Length: 328
Image (cartoon, rainbow, N blue to C red; front, side, top):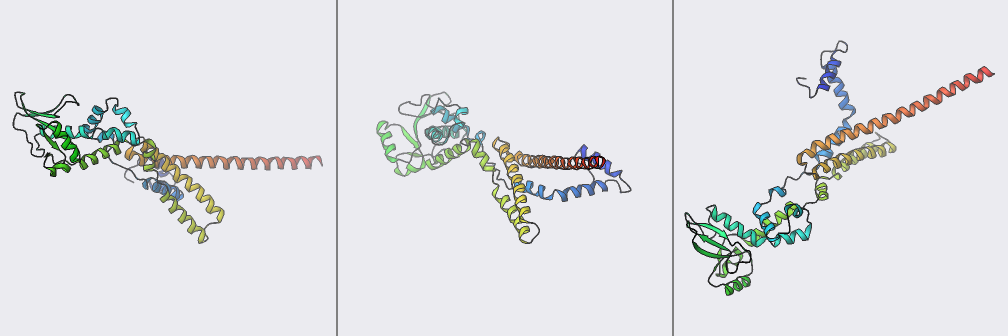
């Protein structure tokens, strides 16, 4: 072996290298192979249980569009990011849906000011787009200013798929053009932004999915023990079928290996649910090995106590016989 993974293994290698006439390192390799053979079942169960987990690398709350988070906060001022992420289901869905229109406004302004064209709109050099300071500003949502701060144009921004809503807005403010989502562009009443209401809804839903994940849901995303359990049961059932083990041995193997698999995945799922990500895989393996070692040590201690009790009983029986002979 060219390199040993730890100082402990190095000490073991030196210890075995001094044993007898076996070449340096070979005794250690032989011992390691014996370990693998003796613990093959355990290592297989732990590795399969850890590898069968489904690790999701989808976007988390930190990957949600900051403009979407800003829209949620501005339209729901009582919410902060901390308690937003603590919301569940319909409550969070409602909070995000109320922000869809504001998210559209932020997208339009951001793209225009970055020099991108939004529908027919493209800012000239020196121009800047800005939103109304008040969300209840009557008549317009966006203004375009020149380099001197003079207003070039006012616009209404509407994220909707309802033509009747557009007509109602134009009846109230007929002199202010509307830049709207694509679904109502065919009405001929608006400027087409090239952004669809469906697209906005999809992005909002992605944001909801990213932030609306409870600890239990993350745990269940990882925890999938059925496949390794089924594979193990088929293997042990085959051994029973061909006569390689008894029914009692089959039951004992199922109990022992099932416990090992479930514990391994439980540890990995717990780490994953706590935002451990890919660390959940080595954590599951390490946890499975520690659990297996603990179980083996407990079994060894129980066996030792049992044999000690038998030896003590034999010793007492022997003394009793000696005393009986002396008395007779």
